[in-house]
Each structure stands twice: as C-alpha cells, then as structure tokens.
Image 1 (tube, rainbow, N blue to C red):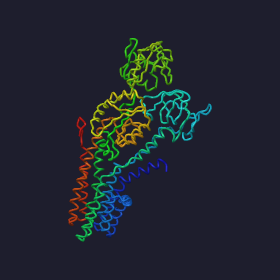
Image 2: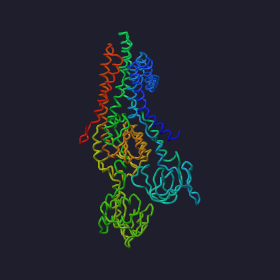
Image 3: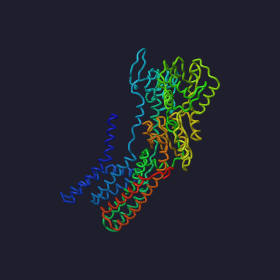
Image 4: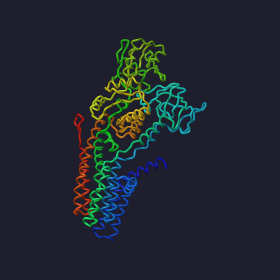
Length: 634
C-alpha cells in the first residue's frame, strides 16, 4: 500500500468512527422503533434491526471487552459487554441498541479528542531532497538520494537543502543549521567543515564528500529517536476503568440479588443498564473537549486529556532558546560608531555594501537601516566573499563589511579599542560586524537573536508555580550566547551546545532523577526531547511540522503565555472530571436503588442512565466559558 493509499485509508477510518457508525446505528434504531410503533411487519423484523444495530455498533466494544477479560482486566468495555449480553439475552434488543448508540457517539468523541492519529514522523524526511547532483569527473549527474554512497562528491547550490551528512571539500557558503542544531545564526562553511542532512545552503556553492547517507544521517537518527521515545510513553490509566474494576462486581451481585428477590429477569437487566458506566466513560472526554475548546480560542492546542493530568505534575520545565525564548531571527541590537561618525552614518555605509547580499546578517542590517528611514544608494561595485564578508565601491571609496579575520586579511589594522568593543559584544552574546570606509574602521554593528518581549514575565510566573522546581534553558548555541540570554531572562540554569540527542539525554537524566519533565521547543532538533518528555509543548506558528506533530501541546501564536494558560486550565479540567464522576455516582446510587426494588423497566433504566450522561455533558460545557483575569488567574 502506498503512502497516499495509507493516508486515504486512515481518513476513511476516521470518518467511519466519527460519523458513519453512530449514524447507521441511529438509523437502525429509528427504523426498529417505527416498525414496532406502527406494527409494520413481523416482530422479528424490528427486533432483528435492533439486534443488527447492537452487533454492528458494538463490534469493537465486544472485541475490546473480550480482550480485557482475556488479560484479566476489568474495564468499562467489560462492563458494557456484560450489560449488552444480559440485555440481549432478556430479549430487550432496542434498549441494548440504544446503549450501543450512546457508546458509539462517546467512542467517536474519545477518538477525536484523545486518540486522533498524528502524522507519520517520516514527514521529517521531507527536509531532505529526493535527488542530488553528483560530481563525476567534469560531469554533474542528477541521481536519487537513495542511490548515493559514502565517498560520493555532491554539489550543493545556493537555495538547496543538503541531502547527506558530509565534509566540505571545496567552496564556501553560509548554511542555516537551525532545524538540526538549533543555532540561531547561520554558520559559515568552508573546506574541512561538516554539514548535516536537512540543513539549508543559503549563499555559496559547496562540494561535499558524502560521509553518511540514508538511515545513518543526523536527520534520520532524529527520526529514529522520536519514534523510540514515543513508543516509551505509557498511557495514563482512565479514571473510569479504575472505578469499574470494583464497581462491576458490586453491580453483578446486585443484579443477581435483584433477580432472586423479584423473580423477574427484567429487574436484573434494569440494574445492569442503569449502572452501565456511560457517564463515567464520558466524564473525562467531555471535560477534556471543553478544556481543549477553551484553550483553542487562546491559540493553544492540546492533543489529549492525559496531558492535562500530567501538566499539574510537572516538576522540571525545559525550554529551548532559539525560536522559543527568542524570535529566531537575527536583528541589529546596537551600533557603535568610530572615527567621529554617527550611528546612522555607519548604518548607511554598511547598508550600501550589503544592499545586494542575501546573507541573513546583511538582511538584518538593511532592515534596521530602513526602520531608521536611511536612504541606501546602490553600490558602484559589489562582491561577496563567501564565509568572510562583502567588498563594495561607492563614490570612489572602498567599503568592507565583515568579521575581524576578514578585515585583517585585507590589511586593515584593528586597534585595541575596537578589539575590546568586539569582545564586549561577544560577552553579551552578540555577533559583531565591522564596517570600514576608505581603509578605516568606521563602526561596529552588533547583531543577535531578539528575546521575546513576554519572556521575562512568563519566567517569573512559572517560578511562582508550586509544582515547578526547576526551569532550564536548552540550546545548540555557544556558551556565551546562552549565558547572555539566561542573564537577561533571569534564569540560573542552562545547557549550551547541545545536539538533538543530547537534549533528549538531558530529559532522560532528569526523569531518572524523579522529575516529571515538560519540554518547550520549536525545531526539528527539539523533536526527540519533545517526544521523550512527559509533556511536550511546541511553538506552533514558527515551529516545524515535526515539532508540532511530536508535541502534545501546541502554542499556535508563538506566545509563551499559552504555557501558563495550559497549566492553569489543566487544574480546572481535572477538578471538573472529578465533579463529573461525583454526578455519575449519585445517578448510579439512585438508579440502582430504584431498579433493585423493581421501580424501573429496562427502557426507563436507559433513560435514567442517559440523564446522568446529560448532567456530565452540561457540567463539562461550563468549561467553555472559563475566563482569565488580567493577572492570568482563573
């Protein structure tokens, strides 16, 4: 079966569970009732329709119930199977069909809110191109990536994704490694540097000798890490199943006792039907659905009820830096002018030289100059020196823009004052770009990844939560950058220079120490850690599809305030689930008492049991209107 056929099959299965099964069961019940009410056709016709409804709609429940019995587990499914068998045995086909209909609707709700299939993690591999250009002598040949072998030399042009792990043997370029390593700034690649599958070549032409292909690449290993971590996640046992484990034996004793006391099998059936734990089954999913809907209006998507339960238990919160605490885009932070010029003069000179450059740092300089409404003339001449900087001519003067090594190589002397200025900016986690005009250094432009404006408030609020004992920033960036950001947002603990597997290992380490771990991230490099964490939270709008699919909670508007909303709403949802279960118990006690004394027929038992379900639904629906005050409290 092809991937396309598989997706179509999954879509059909989902539609069947959500609509077709409950719809067909409902139609069969209605036809059975109409035939019976107007006495159309023989008796076995309307009862036969009801029986078909029971078998068709309850098939999966029967299978699940018998499997649970085989594994010696008493669950809601076991309870339902017992009640249905007893009801059908007593000849009450339509009440049994009504129970099946209620449970089919409930099952669709649970499937949609709790068990909706995630996209295949293989979508990660879309980052890697399907074909590559191989250098063979003087020829360039296009081949399938699957046919590449270790030692092949491939050509990567500007604007192409890199299909393999390898080593640069010729050329120079600027490569965006953020999806794999999490580094906020593009990395210059020259001969001898390593490159990774799935990263993006932004500026120059590279010749890369293949070191790892296929399943051995860094990207493929990340896929494997995510899949392995997801398999290790144990589902949290449903509250209704825990209750049913002791409730079913009690109800069976009552049913048998009711039969012997009254001598009427309908009394026993009524007891089973009125005690059927439909309300228990929907106590959790209805509250979860309402909580999910409420948060969805706040642009926070939650993939299941178990994550509400886990959120209140988080003791260690790990947060990726790039794209989470920061915006993930280089921005000019400040300009230092030398040689008697103004900041705007320095920006204008640099912007002239960078005007035609596609380098991310160049784009940030141009954007900053335009914010200040600085006129930017066209350079007379322009040349990019890949991995180093740019050279331009304007009004008879040579302009150089680049790093210290670039200027030094051009014979430009750098005095101690300028060297110290570069060191000061580096200590603050900023990248320094020097600007010269007429062989003199006229200024320094400091560029860094901008911190989100709400970050400090979010950190302070998270620190006040009783359950959270540790907040750690994780990043693939260097120690200086990480330390600078940590100081600004008042975080005491951070881990720098981490690869994807190291982030995951850090999650496992904390879990081994007894912490319940929450992980917030946005990139592919975060996916293994998101999957391994007890609760994974993805920054959705800027986040990669992989991080979104791997995570359990998604912040669609990239606002960390959503983390606070999710964690606080989780407490409300759990309290409402407990209240729903309390309502269910009250209804069961009343219903069992009336049924035991013969005061209910099987149909009335179903109606009374359904009334309990309605109470639970109304209780859960109130969560849709829960609001936050300006301080973020419920």
